[in-house]
Length: 163
Image 1 (cartoon, rainbow, N blue to C red):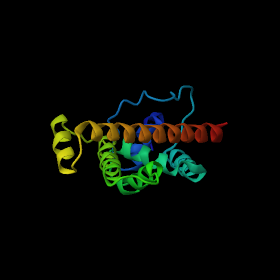
Image 2 (spheres, rainbow, N blue to C red; image 1 turned 90 degrees about the vertical axis):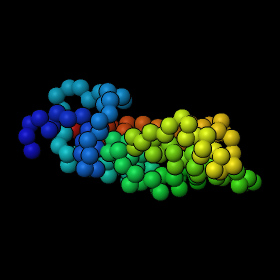
Image 3 (cartoon, helix red, strand yellow; image 1 turned 90 degrees about the horizontal axis):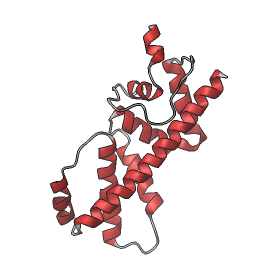
């Protein structure tokens, strides 16, 4: 491992662990700063620790976002549905939650959904476009919260180990 690889941001290393490059704006979240240098193994260990400490869903969201992968789509979708399930949900609410979650996960992985596609998707699931878009936004916000919390936990783990 050369010296330059130790200077890569944590988010880029998460993407690299997934065999990808982030191609994302890595300035979001807390900047590393200082002269600390972490190995890829340090980052992998911090990810594992974060997952073990209750951020399993967030770690999947991190890997989906920075790795631009749909590897965790089924598991994330299951968690999203579980978090939104209410007694007495109608079939329409269940379908909107599931479909909105799937679209939000695909968007988090870097996929694009054309504006015109929402109308077609809503038609196919017998719903209104506005309702579908609202569920996609809600799922996207939930995913971002999971990702943010996990990234914070990963960085905390790294800095605690470095101290």
